[in-house]
Image (cartoon, rainbow, N blue to C red; front, top):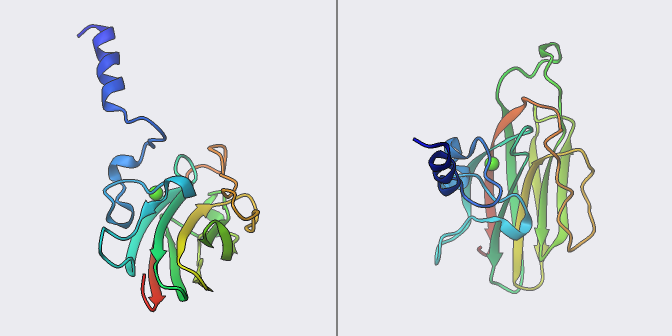
Length: 184
Ligand SMILES: [Ca+2]
């Protein structure tokens, strides 16, 4: 095969955008791949006509996929949202492992506005809840990410994205359970 042909094939099989090395092995929230890297490209949790409430699993890694975003809608005028989460880092979590520890954050936003967030010094033992309520039908976003910034970026902006120069090698599965009242 000519080099040019190989390059053409490579370009054709590489999706445009922000494909990551781990895309083929990811199945974030049963999406079949990596979740969106920003609020603008957040992966929908609900299939058309179905509820977004439920349990989901995903994967982030500092090297090339530090950020996963999901989105869902609450159609009712007044809705309360509760998200329970737990990170499950791959590999050792002890301080002697030599693995650099990178903080993680979970964000909950409604119509771009920060509703609640929790940050942890590392994904080890990072678990808890974020929750909130809105008075009007809302578009919600959930951010799960390795983090070198504090939460609470101004409303309407995308959270500062960690860069590929963050501590390498640390990866984590996570589980989230989304519940809404009355529904989402
Ligand atoms: Ca991911």
